[in-house]
Image (cartoon, rainbow over all chains, first blue to last red; front, side, top):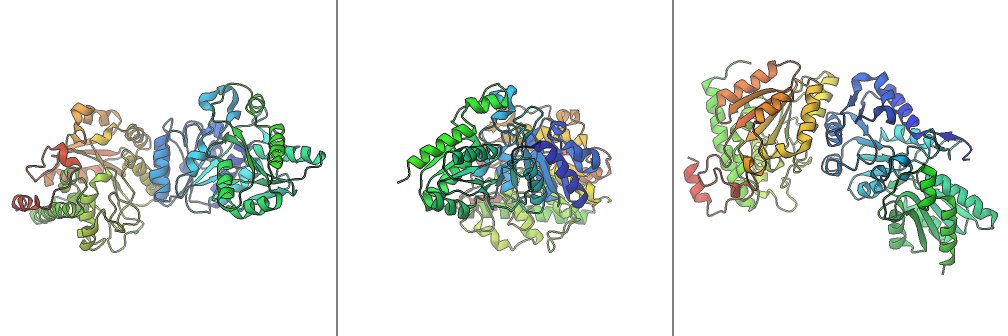
Length: 319
Length: 274
C-alpha cells in the first residue's frame, strides 16, 4: 500500500472513455480546462457528445442540466475553485431542485493546487455542496477509486459532486491506497484497517496520510482503525457509530476547511447518536498560499504526523 | 405552416381573454404573486401554446414534444393558467396557488404536469434551453425548444454566456423570447440597468432577431413560423409588450410587478376585462 502512484485526472479521462462505449446516454462538458482535466480524452473519441463551453461555469452547469432534462447523463466539470465556486445557484436551483442526472466532477481541489496560490485553493467545496438537499458528495482517495466511482455513478440517478485532486507529487500523482482494487459501494464507507484504540476517518488525499499515521501509531503500540469516508453525503452513519463504539475516540482528516466538511459530517453523526472525543484535522478556517503541494500540507498541518498527534489527543480525552 | 385563418385568431383572442381573467382571479385568491409580467406576455404565450407548440397534455412526457421553458419564473400564474386550459391539470388547482401543500408552487417545480424546468432564480433558462436543444439534436428528435425570459433578466451574465454557446453550436432548433415590457422590480429597465440597443446586442451574438408587437397575432405567428425556417442560427423574438397589459391601473406600474390584486379590486378588473 502507498508504494505506487497514480493520477486521478487520468483515471477520470479513462473512466469517461469506457463509459462512452458502454452508455450512449453519457455526455461530457467542460469549461476550457478539458485538456488538464483529461475529459478531452472522451472528446477525442466521442466528439459529438462532448461540449466545451469556454470560460463560463454558470452556463456549463445550465447546459449540463438541459442535456439531463433531454435524457442524457451529463458529466460536467472544471477546477473546483470555479465549480461549485461560481455556480452554487445553478447547482441548487437546477441540478438539485430538479434532481437531475448531472455529475459534477471537479479537480484541483484543496491546498495541493500549490504554486497557483490561495485564489485557486478550494477548501470550502465539500461544505458548499453538502448542505444542498439531493446533492451527493464523493471524495475519492486515489486514481483506482476515481475510476470505479465515475463508472458507478453514471448508473445512480441524481446529482453528484465528485472532488478530485491535481496531485501531491510532481507529475500530478497521488499515492495508491487501493492497489488490490476498489469496488464502489454508494454510501458505504470502506474499512481499511482494524484497531480498537482510535478510529481514523479520512477522505481524498488525506486517506494515505491516515494509513501512514496508523502504521506509525502501531509501532508505538496504539492500534487504529482506518475508515475511508469516500462518500461524505449520504454519510455511512452505521459504520461511523460502529467504530465509535469500538474505539471510543476518533480523528477526521481532510484537505478542506475544518468547518462544514467531512469532519463536520462525522461530528454531526457522533453528536446526535454516540458522542465520543473527535479531533478534526483540516485547514483551520484560513486561505492557502503559493508553494509546492507537500510544503503546503506540512505548513497547514495536513500530514500523517499531525493525524498521529490528533489521535493521541483524542485518546487522552476518553472518559 | 401557413397563415392562420381569422377563425384561428379569434380562437387565440378568446383564450387570451380568459387567460387574463384566470391569472387575476388566481392571484387575488392567492393574495401574493406577480401580475405585471404575467399579463404582459399573455398573447405571446397563448400564441405559442395554442398555435405553434407540438405537445400533448394527455402525454406530458412524449419524447418528441417541443419544450417550453419559462425562465422568468415569476410568470408562473400565466403559465399555470395556460397549462390548466390546455388540460395538463384541473382548473380547480389554480385556487390553491401558493398555499401549503398545493400542487401549484409560487414558482414552477417539477411536480407540476407540463413544467419543463423549475424556475425562480433568473438567468438560467436559456442555458437549459441550449442543453435541451443539444440533446434533441443528438437524438435526431424534431423537438424545438422555446425559452421565455424577462427583459430585466437580461442583466444576468449567464444569459450572455448561453447566448454565445447557442450560436457556437448553431442551434436552429432553439427560440428565445424576451418579454420586453420595460419594467423590472425597482423601476424602468432603462434606469435600473439600460438594455438598449437590445436587438443589436442579440444580433452581435449571431442570433437571428425578430422584433414584434407582443399583441399582434399575425406578427407573433409569422415570427414563430419564420424561426422554423432559419438554419444554423438560433432565433430571438423580442416581443414589445406592456407590463400589466389589459388592466389600466396595472399598466406601466412597477408596483404591480410583484403585488397581487385585492379581492375588492376584482370588481374594477372585471369591468375592464369585458
